[in-house]
Image 1 (spheres, rainbow, N blue to C red):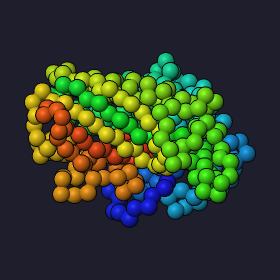
Image 2: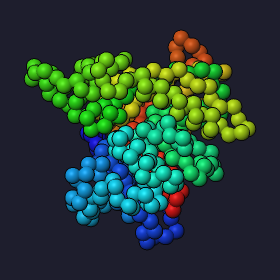
Image 3: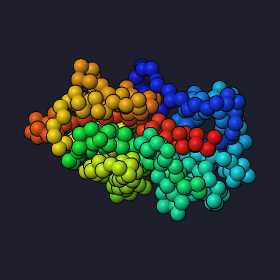
Image 4: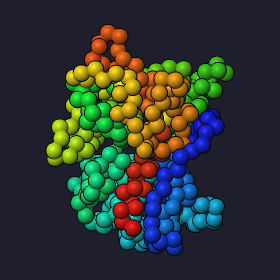
Length: 354
């Protein structure tokens, strides 16, 4: 993970009455960015489990690595354990996710962070950070962790709406290269080095110059489109907003979203414009946003940044200001560590199987 900030990381705690290891989970794609985030989170948290590291590359099976400060063996994806593990975390490629689903068939406890299982017949969008108390998914569900940008928005917007009804909102989401995994991070780094040394730049992932640039869409030959990611965020957010409102409340209105590829390695930044039925004022908006997992920076503090918030749990909100041209609206700045937010919610789902 890229992080230039020197800050104290707030580590989530997953409570258990047992101190001994009670279960063994499997992690597919343990060397990916998401895989490493999950490994770190489980190693420093209080989750009473052992972790079997599963490589999607057959040639890496049998290799030795490290997990939680101890030697660990890398296992292959075809191992029988994959079929019977109480929890399998899928954090590798789309191909490895689909292979793992074929191996597990109807086995519960499958948690997908890759979005590759979204079209699976048993796929069920999950985000415990914004789910109502007592919420449970179907027993045979494939738990698809919601897009981190959707989770971040769903953590803040419904809280505002519950206190001060929202009329409408517009959100610009600035996507980091790490959402394209290690290849995206490496391409941005190589593009930057190439431009500064006046050399040709690689364009395999974005099919466009991202370094020192902003992209409203990728090039035609990019393997994934920015529009597809934007639509995924919309789908997941609509699900979370409708689910989080509960049966006795009106959900926050769906915001208008625009996804922009930013030339940053890591961490989401989001600019929120929210128009209320009645103007609550800056201090009231800050107060309404406050939560255990939401770090609200009042006006006398510097607004949060993606670099400064790297490695921290939840989201941070700051730079709250009323719109000078609309007396009913305000602006908010929100940041989140995309890998950490997805990993936290995945571990929260997995902990329900302990």
